[in-house]
Image (tube, rainbow, N blue to C red):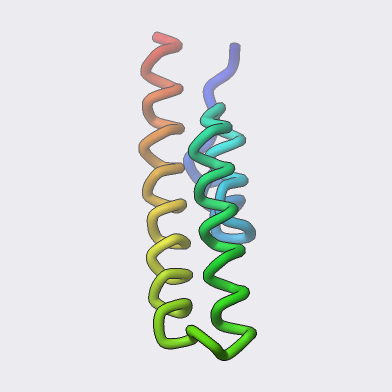
Length: 80
């Protein structure tokens, strides 16, 4: 098995929350981050809970990125 790139995982996570985690093999966490990001986006675009949705979306994006970096590094350590 080949090592995975932290850069590729992070770019994927920035494009869509959870995709970087899928790249790292963490499907369950990927689904959680994706669903929370979708919920936050709905809150923001509906305008009903925008005051809550925008910070939630930001935290989800940052969390997905950090989680991806950690997951890719963990994946690469298991290969050694």
